[in-house]
Each structure stands twice: as structure tokens, then as C-alpha cells.
Length: 128
Image (cartoon, rainbow, N blue to C red; front, side, top):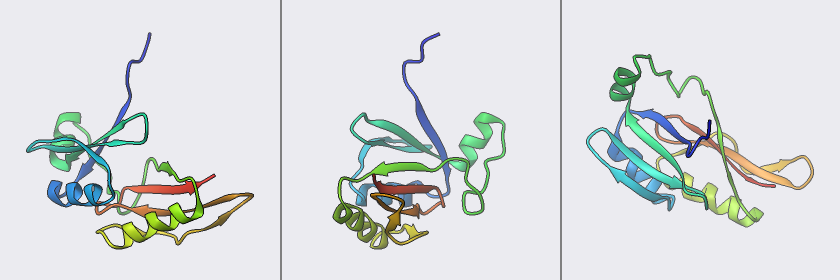
């Protein structure tokens, strides 16, 4: 079997808030409907769909976990320099996101931080 594409689906409370947040960080929209808002991430245009939680839960016949309390996956967004990492941190502070950790050194030549979007989905920003 050959997989042609992969994308992620997250459940959110408020599509307008999610759209505003990811737009303010500079991500390109992949469209919006009454049920979801979608964005491209990275140079390869990885797609993350943000569905209304009740729509995602109903269509999957699963309970969607509370991303404020737990996390199944943490995506990492790469940065080229420490300055770029710090710029990301400032953008997130000035939007509706939450810094989980401040930018700091990790091991040899790694620098970054963790943040959560308005629904608690976690991401890393790292220079490696």
C-alpha cells in the first residue's frame, strides 16, 4: 500500500478564535467551513484541520480528549536561529496562545520552547 498524504485533525471549541490565532502567527489558511478551519504548516504544506469538537467526536464515534489536561501528540515547528525562536515566543504571547515554557537551551545547540493554542494543543518551536 502507498500512502499519498497525511494530515492531522484536532477538535476545538471556537473556530473563529482558532482561525484568528493561527492567522496571527502567519500560517496560510487551507479554508474554513461551518465545521472546521484548516491551515498549512511548514514548507511541505502539512495540513492541520481544526474541527468543532462535537463534529469530530460524532463523526469518529469517539470521545475527544481534553487537550487542556492531556496531549496525544506535540508537533515541532523548526526555527533557523535563536532570534527566530524568540520572535515566535513574542508572537504567541501577543496572541491568544499560552507559553508552557520560555525559550531556553536544550542539550548541545538546541534552543526552544513549548506553547499551547487557545484549545490547549501543544507545539514546540525549536532551533536544532
